[in-house]
Image (tube, rainbow, N blue to C red; front, side):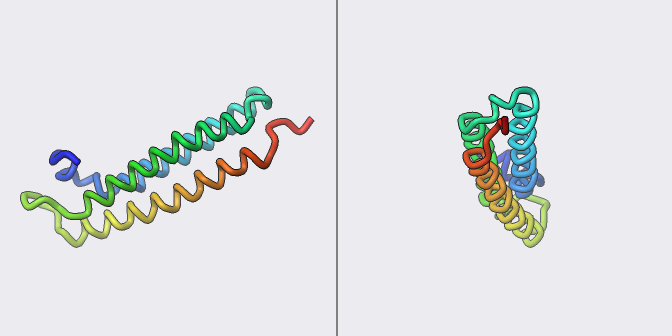
Length: 114
């Protein structure tokens, strides 16, 4: 991780922000595609959006994990940065679980009920 990213006060929160954004993006992309044309809502769309969004969630969790320890020249208090980092990692785990369950549901529930 770059030093600029380690110095950022938002880096420990990356798991929360990127995880929520990825979960939102997967839900909106898949549900809107089914709404526009139910034939689009098959397993390929679900698997593709699920993998892309899961990668984004994992990236946010890794950024939070690596940003827990503040660099020596940082003005942040180490306790609050460590807490935010652990919170980001935990939130990323929850969002990853949600993305995985939505991806699995795309294989179980058909796009069209006709």
